[in-house]
Structures are given as structure tokens and as C-alpha cells.
Length: 171
Image (tube, rainbow, N blue to C red; front, side, top):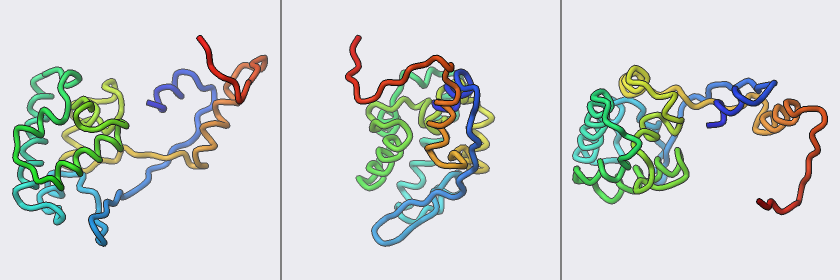
């Protein structure tokens, strides 16, 4: 995760600001992303069956996490297969996994989904409970845009560092 890398290796760290609401599009309609359990229960793009199953799966994940099960070894699809989801809901869950981790639900560890894509060091039961009951507020963006991360990296390099571009990396 970039924040951990910046904290460890950068001398200068850009300021990050909260993004606000996230939106998802289904057809021509845009909905606010359902961060909390009450939001999932009223998330109109899905049938009541899908909504209830999503909440059941989230509660199962919370229980497994609280009982200290190793969620790094279990992928999201292993939880999803315990419930009867529509194809639409499964595509949505897969899309969330891709958004957070870059891979689909058959490869995304449950721990990464629960932590919002952050590493497991940032995950704890209190944060998961707050996210599911009060709403996720974990997504931040660099105040001056992505270029501010590059600028901070360059400014954090030792003065005698030589930078090479357009070169093939070899071992």
C-alpha cells in the first residue's frame, strides 16, 4: 500500500484528502455506494435476496475475523459460493475485488476485501465494525493530484541519485 511505503521511504509525503461519496452505475441510474449494512439492505439495484445474502456474508466475515480465522488464505469467491447470488450481484462483487486489488474474487483474499484493499497491518476488528455500521471513510486522494506523489518521491531521493528513463530493467 502506497501510504505505508511513503511513510517508510519518503522524506516528504504529500497531503491526502478525503474523497467523499463513491458512486456506482447500474444502467442509466447512479447510486451511492453502500458502505454500511443498513445501506446494503436498501441498495435498490439488487433483489432483496441478494441484499440479504450480502449482509449475511458480511456478518459471517466479521464473525470469522473476530474468531481470528486466517482470512489471508481464503478468497472472496469461497464465501460467495455459500450463498445464492444473482449473476448481477456476483459481477458486482467481482468488480469490487478488481477495483480494490486488481484481481477478481477468485484471487482476492478476504482480508484485502475487508480492509478496503489495504494491507492486513491496517485491518482490525474495530475498523471493520465501524466501516460496516458507520460507513467507510478510508479512501483519500493526493491533494495536488497524482503528480504530487511523484514529486515527493523525487524530492525524497538522495542528492547523488541518478535517474534513468526509457531503459529495460534487467536482473
